[in-house]
Amino acid sequence: MKALDLAIIFGYLFGVTALGTWFGRKQETTRDYFLGDRSVPWWAIAASIVATETSTITFISVPGIAFARGGNFQFLQLVFGYMLGRVVISLLFIPSYFRGELLTVYQLLERRFGNRIKMLAAALFVVMRNIADGIRLLLTAIVLAAVYTSFQPAANAETVVVASVILIGIVMIVFTYFGGMEAVIWIEVVQLGIYIGGALAAAVVLVKGINGGFPAALALGAQFNKFSLFDFSFDITKTFTFWAGLVGGCFLTMSTHGTDQYLVQRYLCTDRPRRAAAALLSSGAVVLAQFIGFLFIGVLLFAFYHPQTDPAYATAASTAFPFTGGDRVFPDFITKHLPSGLSGLVVAAIFAAAMSSSLNSIAATAVNDLYKPFKPDRSDKHYFRVSHWLTLLWGIVQIAVALAVRHQNRSALDAALSVAALINGPVLGVFLVGTFLRRVSEPPALIGMVASTCAMIYIYFFTRIAWTWYGVIGSAITFFVALVASFAFAPAPASRRDKLAPGGAAD
Image 1 (tube, rainbow, N blue to C red):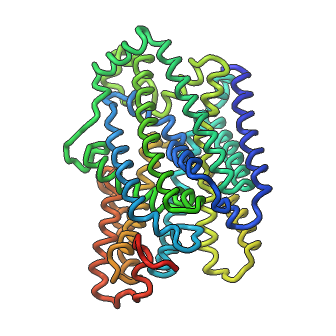
Image 2: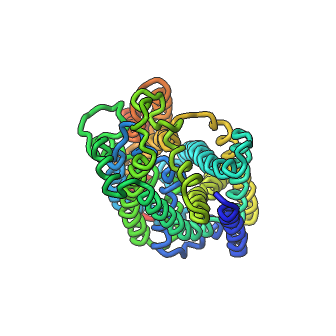
Image 3: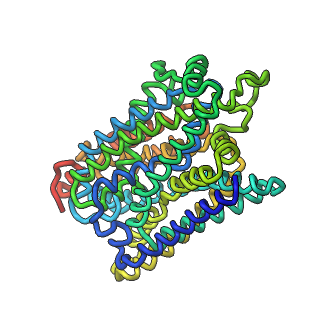
């Protein structure tokens, strides 16, 4: 990499910061700050959903999946579940988002059950999202560190990673602090084009660098079974099987895209359920296409580095040999083999994916669901000011998480998705209880959530069950424990029973 690349990267970071500050001129109320006054067009929301789903973890980790020894296209089985989950959300959940004025999805739980359920779900979201996005921040910092060490090979790698985490974290905080949700969405529209263009450019250079070009890469991929797509075995300890992908992926998407403030907040930035559904469904087609593209890049990287020619390949401890992990492969190619200017553009694309900040969503949840119950009847100006301070606080927390997990060797994609699935299952379960078990009141629903959360923590630490099943198991435990417990409590008041039903009464 050359000085031109470094200039492009830092120019991009400066541009993101400046754009966030510019959008800050329009932010006067909490509604503006969290929802952009509900005037964002559906196609921009669709692009934002894709950009949010295609984080740095996707950009870097998915090619590593196909590159690894034994790696293949079976990850796509999970994406098929993602598509199915979108259809279910459009039919089951989206209509309820537009009944009354919502700032967070967890306010629906308050209408249906009461304040305690809402606060527990909101607290789980805040914890999960900070951990998952701290991991994403770390992965982005690793890329920036690789860029810097290509200029300064003698630099201490540990120090550079720490400094990169702090630098990128500060940019993310400043951008979100001033710009609010509308700035996040519009910069994600731009980012979608940047990182898709960057990935395509990297793929072209890869093909040109492979002896024999694309046909040779396809032949090598077929020889090593890289294009294997389906695994119909029913083994709950395997991450990517057809059943884990279709069922587990569906439930994971129902939780992340249907009950998680990070994505639901984007639907709330438009004014009609039909537009929100159009944004969600159209984003699914783009997400499928880009996951296929990133897996193909992994095959191209395998053909470019041809690690199978090394005698140590078959017995190496790392399945990503000669690299220590799959997350290191694509950054190595970007920083060492792309021509000057283009490498800077691709690294900027990685930062583009990383700038899908969750800080505004976390602040919205913390203010509306966790702070307001203790400080009611304050002015909107007061809540607006608290929102800014909480954006700053959660940014610092994510930096701390990134620094705390920087020595883990597990795939960042696997780590982040397993954390998300761990906590989102119990939350999805209580939404399903509210939708289908109209007799269930707050106490049994709360018992179901607590039992599910405890069970999922046990499963995470003490079993080998694949994380793709976490959403199914977590939501099922919440649902059935709440159902059984409901016979020991009075039924929910009639006024609350239809609050989560797709065709239920409006407020």
